[in-house]
Structures are given as structure tokens and as C-alpha cells.
Length: 223
Picture 1 (cartoon, rainbow, N blue to C red):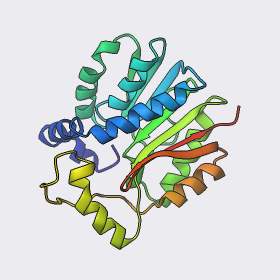
Picture 2: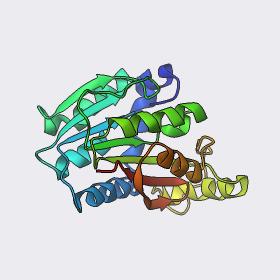
Picture 3: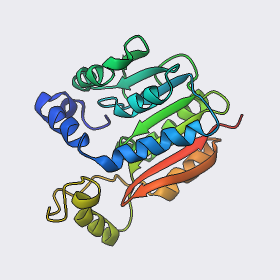
Picture 4: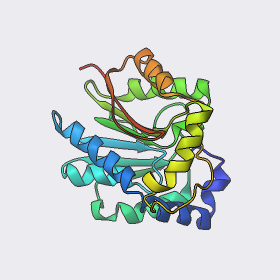
């Protein structure tokens, strides 16, 4: 996670976040689509998830690719506790590293076939986001995928609309639910992400899924 470390070491807060995330069918749709897209023309052997939280995205990949190994990385020991439960069915195939997304050098030594980051880069400032994409691109094996699922900024007016619609379409709790706390989208627009991916040398960039301000961006290191 990219917010203050103490926020993500509170067992109650982390437990609520994990339980709420499990009730977000839209997010699982994005994960499934990312896995299916990668499977069209590749079969990854090593998948890394950064700022991995409870490990659900990594689990989706490991379930789809039974021969693959995974690396879970996050700065929160409390999230690690939940991730070990999520990833228990893949025992022997997953390594765990406590590491912050902002630190130089991405987790793990081997070059991943797929590098995932979900709902974390909105917490980075402009310089940190630029550095993240450069490091991510350099870490991938040739032909490897970078997948970023995140909340992205827009105009104030569209932000107001998205906040009103988020409970119904993102949280999946029904039409009668009123809008709650405004979603933190950071200051990075989709256009910024696309520009930084290109500047980092990644190609084959697209956004195969979007719901309100939550966008799935996929890019590839040239083979």
C-alpha cells in the first residue's frame, strides 16, 4: 500500500478494507480480464504483484497458470497476514517480501513475465510515478507485461458524478446506497500514465477495462 505505513498496520482498518474489497465484483472482472488478455499469447512463469494488499490479483494469475510462481510484495505486515490466507492454496509457489513501492529496485531478483500493481500508484507524486514506471519497465523480461489497475484523476465535475455512482457500480451494493467518502484518485490522469509508459519504453499499450475512474492499463516490454 502507498499510504502512511501506520494506516495499513491497523488490524481493524485492514480487515474492513479486505472484507469490502471482496464484495467488489467489478474489480474481480478487471482481474479476470487482465489474466485472459495475457493468456491470449503468453503463459507466464513468474508473476510479481507490488503493493499487493491481500494478494487477490496474484491469486487470480496463479489459479489461471498452474505452472507459474508468484512474488507478493507490500509494505504492510498486516496485509501480509491476510495475503498468506488468500494465497494459501498456492503454498510452495509464492514468496513474500515486505517492501515499499517507492523504494529503488523492485522486489525480487528474477525478471517477471507479469508485473502487477493495483490501486496504489494514485498515492505516488509525479516524480515517484515516473520512477516507478521506469523501474517497472526495466525489470520486465522482454515481452513481459506491466498491468496497472488504479483510480485516475479527471475534472472536478466528473469526479462528483463518479463519487455519486461509485457505490452502485464499483462497490456493487445497490441503487439505493448513497455516495460515501470521495474516492482518492490522486492527481494523475490517464493521459499522464500513458505518456509515462511510453517514455519508459513500453509499447502495446491499451486500456481494456474501465469503470468510472478506475482504469485497467496494460503495456508490454518489446520482445
